[in-house]
Amino acid sequence: MTSIAQVQGRRSSIDLSWPTFALLSLVLSVLVLLPLFWLAYYSLRSDTGGGATLDNFIALVADPTLLRAYGLAISMALAVGILACLIATPMAWLVARTDLPARRIIRMLVTASFVTPPFIGAIAYEILAAPNSGIVNIIYRSAFGLDPSQYLVNIYTFSGLVFAIACFTFPYVFTLVANALDKVPSDLEDASSILGGKSMTTLRKVTIPLVLPAMLAGTLIAILQALTMFGSPAILALPAGFHVITTKIWSLFQFPPRLGLAAAAALPLLIITVVLLRAQKSILGRKGYTVLGGKSGTPRITKLGSWKWVAVAFVFCILSLTILLPYLAILKTAFTGTVGDPINFDTLTLRHWKFVLFEFSATQLALRNTFLLGFLTATAVTAIALVVSYLVIRRSVPGARYLGVLATAPVAIPGIVLGVGLFLSYANPTFQLYGTIWILLIAFMTIELPAGYQQMSSAFAGVHPELEEAGRIMGASRLRTLWDITAPLLRTSVVAAWCFVFVGTIRELSATILLTTANTKLVSVIIYDLNESGDLGAICVLGIILLVASFAVVFVANRVPVLGGSQMNARG
Image 1 (cartoon, rainbow, N blue to C red):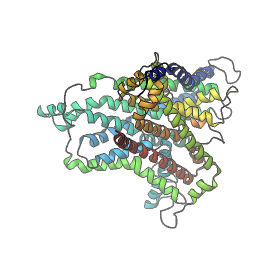
Image 2: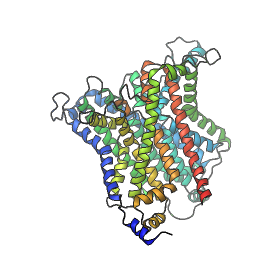
Image 3: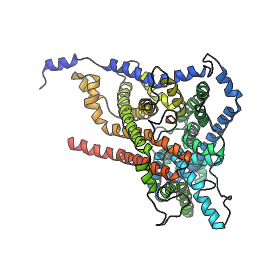
Image 4: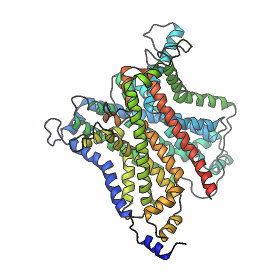
């Protein structure tokens, strides 16, 4: 039995909560606030003389190329949001509220599309719908005997860009709307039916108004994703001869670099992002759309009847365009000589795999850098998120909410904006981190911190503090209680957060495109570089490696709760 002297000795031990709070405040401030400070500072500096000036902001409204880039970016984002909503909303209703066959499998497939990096999807549609070499156009010309100048579809257009991005952003709308439909009680719909309302009347006047906030919030997320995206516009818009604002900011870093103008051009994008996120939060927080209290029945399932196979055809078409065709195009290109080759024993080859894995000198370095940074980022972010969420949720230190604000703030910073801020912060003679792996680690930690913090804070909210209080009564410090009692209870959430951050890290392109050098190349940047040289076979091999690694990590994350539960039962 523990003696009273031992307990009192432990009680007199130093509580490290305050030093930890101070250290985390410093670390998060450096990660989040320092890039924003240098972004604002350089936006007011001249690119030529170095003095203070407003010329960079004047150029934003005077330079027609910048105005056009912003106009096209906003138009593209709005079109993507509308198209994603039009695709996702009926599909979510079919999956959540009808007797559509294979509904669970459809949900799994849509969720799986989250793992696909949008720039990989854009490359897949290059393979499918490029005007000269696209598989669809090759089949079209062959079927009708047309000359090589004829084509059916052209992905290198504004509408092609909108379509390609919407294919990989509609899951945001689908997930929110499907979850909202799951929670809509059947009582109100039953009441509408009792009063004589037909199925479509009930859907239009009862169900849709209840899920409207989720539709609007999902659409805003799709708009935000499209507006801040770099990879897909760089792959599809630049060959089409136009810039959106993310690619325009990137072009300002080409020789001769115009850092002040790049910083000034990034600030409006940051402001728009903050406004969209505030609007999305406001919409989801409107209680007037929420059914509160009372016990409701299970969701009302609509019988499709003779429309069932029309619905199946619609869903199959969407899944084909967003998952099946892009994945098949990537696989086909990775194992055949050229994009236009038919699939037979004569054209099947491992030449691209041999080139990527054994002959291309940059591959080994890029793979090593990518997975090393994924491991380091996931470990560091999960550890920081664990401690920060503990201090915030348990309110163990006055002012701990400040840490929560800092931990979630990077979600409002677009990747390209963060890349500009980090370049300006750490490429100067004081730090000299540009060209090292450390500037990439800082970038990934900043980008992924909100995801890790949100996962861990949700997990902490589900753990009752009584066990921690018992540990504190026995004399343990807060951090010792966190390590010995709380962390083991949260191990499944910790592993899930680690996996989530790892996947997000290895697919990042928007910020890293400005921060990598020849010695710090990553797989995503190598893919972008190879796309400029047109080596689609090698690109597809690297894309498959990224996808397999991502799906493997997601599979582990989904298996961990089961393993954790059995371990706890065995120990219980």
